[in-house]
View 1: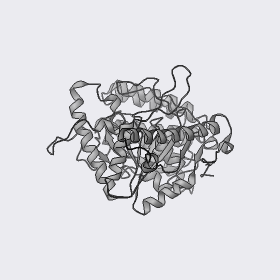
View 2: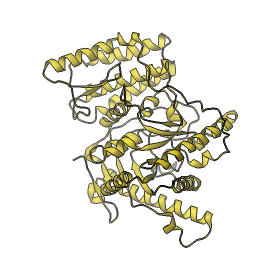
View 3: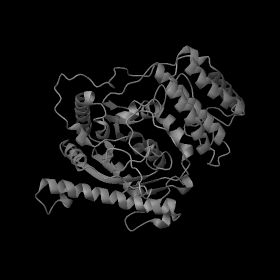
View 4: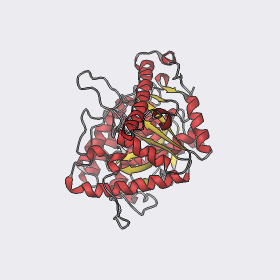
Length: 447
């Protein structure tokens, strides 16, 4: 998710009669797939695979398989089937041919078809590195699923309201995203910092408090990575985080199906606010509506919101090539803090660190156009949270509001950097849990 700083939302007041943003839509559900798709070879493969698995005594699979292929049925219900000999090189060829046929028929734009084909080969190469004997079946099934979802959205475009709730039925887009990213994570070399604090956060949420996670941001897959690392220990957090997301992940054809499975506050990123001058005012009005939606959420309590105050994904140092958390925007941090305080509900701010750029690194430079190239790898990842940081504690010795804002932002950012460095030592220097520090305890809660 490209999470812009909230300062980008402060571009002017929005009158009560302001028109809805371009992503607003009254549609409550995704339309069923066209009948032509139901008759496709891919649909036949699904039916045959399910029949063969059940005939062998497999029954209906669990929602989250340890091993097995996740196939998204056309009518929306997720099915999990066991390893199937039906998924072979011929099916791989048919998938590529089908992508090209849809392009030639005018059902799929050429740039989207090209991106899907490139994504297929990159995803295949990455998944096949994970050592799972069922990796090929899982890879091909997941690529069939994303092809289906992208094609469906091209033909029946889904648009996002300012506050979007994850679509779990009739098609479970949340599990679709989880199962697509899952085989890219090397869980043997992945770590969570301070798992006990995530339990504390859940307890605060149960008490009706609000929680904001001030985080760095590394990849489009960040939401799935957070959810997968907490899937066993803190499933409620995994499924209920609300992400402040930039417009690119709700407009890019290959991103949209994954975004549909997350809870989002949709805003226009500060980094892209001026890409098209004629749209600046519309973007500001839209962002004001999103701010109002966030305020309403916080007033209701029990909300956990993730935001990247840097305004976008981390990038490597152009001279050293080293990756590091991008600096936080003090205005974004302060706007979020004030929203939390004005909700009249107890609120807490925690610094969160993510290290996962190897999975799906962004382009070296910020790009203006939609449709970036996806480079994908199988790799270990890390997630860590540190103790709550209270504004009053940090600013007790200053009466200058601007200075207090900068001090609070610096405290949050420094904590994220500290956690990031511990994760880097664990994952990239092979120190594992021995990289733990006096304030950051690493573990693997899925074991």
